[in-house]
Image (tube, rainbow, N blue to C red; front, side):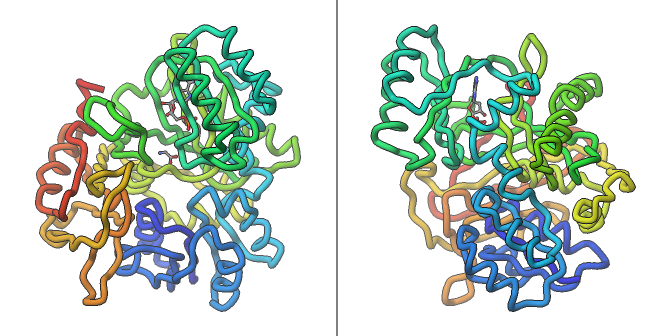
Length: 421
Ligand code: AMP
Ligand code: GLY
């Protein structure tokens, strides 16, 4: 069976790596892919946002399953287009992916169905939003409604910061049309947890969870990034907590999406805050997380192709998902300067010097004209190890990561340092 994966990050390299282990997998195509996916699949030079280009690239090939990694093609309805052609696709339709693509939709949906989340108001009028800020207590969280690559969320400690966030979203349109509406919400404190469930829109699988480190610097300092590292399972996660998240959040979301004629298929990612009043939703994503995927798929004991095909054929109930008890830690190597300006094109050395069981998932990498692997983005690699404990996995990653290098490379030293998190 030939597979076509849309995306080019370490998440998609991990998905390709896991799918390549299935005995039923034939050829794998990845668009646009990276130097890592190029070693196990054929890269197709079409961007994940180019829906027409993807439709054509898929139609030109003998493909039995399409897997959509990133949010942009999901929100643009790539899955709907492919399903209309009778293709099997892993990922939600555009109307189901709205749970990620519009925070206003997502908040309304949660309030309609009493899914616990921060209390909030949505505004499409600048003056009304400003008036609301002026009458609010701080800190306050300001969010652009639409997709903004994780950068459209500002936690404002004071009124001036909140107003300047509002100005940049609604007046200067820093995130384009994503800022036509804003959500102003209560600040929640607690520990953050990423929870994932697979679903065929009826059956909702038990959760798998991970922790993600969003800030660039050690100690969770500095600006937000796409994610600098992750580990799974979190040491503070308990079955009781899992049941509560499943029963009050993930299960009712999937059932109510179906009742609202937005049947959701694929993987649902809940970004949660564990508050004193129980778990609450910060946001939903309609896809796998990055860098969480790099630490959850190595723990999946099932054949991922079986899981994906069961979802496309509405038979997930028959699949018993199994996750190994091992701990998995992933550390992202980034280009110096990221998430601000950075240079690319630097050769990466040491990729073959890591221990045989260390996984190196590529993101911003490509082959240069001499066939050497060079940097090609902000987040460059995720280096992943498993172990019998978080500490063991963590020390294996850090023992190995120093063997890989490129000019100005940067990584956090405190990923999965449990005593500090
Ligand atoms: P989001 O993209 O909505 O997950 O937000 C990005 C990050 O902002 C989250 O991972 C949290 O660290 C933080 N955040 C979002 N909403 C809130 C909130 N209501 N209270 C506290 N922190 C939040
Ligand atoms: N780990 C954050 C995200 O995938 O959006």
